[in-house]
Amino acid sequence: MNVTRRGWAVVAVVGFCLLMGWEYGARSLNALVAPLVVVMLAAAITVSRADRPSIDRHPVEEGFIGDRRTIGLSITADAPIAASVEDTVGDGLDVQDGDNVGDLTLAEDSDFSYDARLEKRGVHEIGPATITVRDVLGLAQRRFEGGRDESESQLNLGQTQDRDQEQVRVLVYPKVYDLHGASRRDLQALDDAVREHNREEFDHLREYERGDSLRDVHWKSTAKRADGELVVKEFVADEDLGAVDLVAESTPRRDDEMASAAASVVTYLLEMGVAVGVTAPDGSCPARTGYDHHRSVLRLLARTGAGEATDRERREADILVRADDDGTVVRIDDREIPFDRLCDDALRTAITGGAGESGSDGSGIEGENETGTDTDTESDGNSPGVTA
Image 1: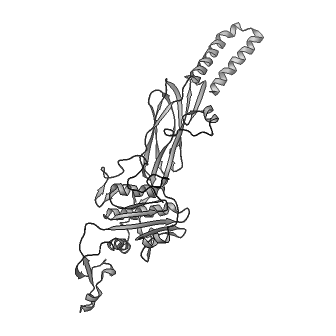
Image 2 (image 1 turned 60 degrees about the vertical axis):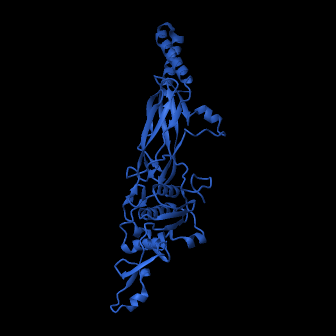
Image 3 (image 1 turned 90 degrees about the vertical axis):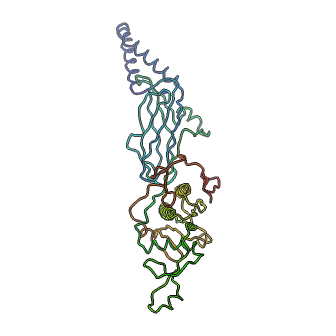
């Protein structure tokens, strides 16, 4: 328990009155001193008897950079008491000055909330909250840091605290750029990477059309044509576009660029209905399609750090995304495409489930709000749903 500046002012007045009473007689000062002493005693008793408030944090929904989230706490005290609340906001989140600080009267399920903007990819912690209770007149106060009394925290520095309700984590996805504005030639390279897995059943020959890949040219038939026009092979249409394995790697401090490029390419392919498997420095997701798989990939890329792929992973990858000090490139076979050339300034802020699918609201994330375990990713026990 601490005496506030207002409380010290009262103590100073009482001390001055006692000194004056000693010199000139106390009778005329009793009417002033007695009420002040009673008020100070009442304040000390009220604050010292206050128990630690309990905190129940509301889950914070995952989101993309630039999204805003409401951070909510339900605080319960055994008896009504005035208090101020200050919540700790970690790096990667932005709040307006003073929004995470507020005054309220604690009772049963007193709500405190504020808005935060998601600023950086990764897993970010919110909390613990510091609650300072005080008497009605603000003469004495008692601070509970992270749900514990300040003095109790100082006496238990080496002990593990129960942090279940003291902190909450929010997962922020990497930036996802729209690739549909890229040049036809660059997008054709991505399409070719997909079609290599769906070229088993030949259908017929047809004349070459602008945008067709040269690898589909049937050179024997072309050589027989008198007009010299190219002839390309057409394959049997199949709703299953096959599967693609994407490997992402980066040098130190370039993991954000790597994650953003990989997420953008995966989103483009999933919207085509392609099953995409992803291998990142800190884990992998098997090749699947759909909304849940898209979310699992974004979760993986939100958590992953920098790291190099193995030679085997590079050889087996259909698409390799690499970020280093020279920039970010997307490698398909022997061709490298600078990622800056693939993307434009348009950012995606929704999870899709494949061609023509999205979340139930058509715009964002639904279902789980926690950064919990995914059924769509493999785990090594270090991070939920992630394997090395």
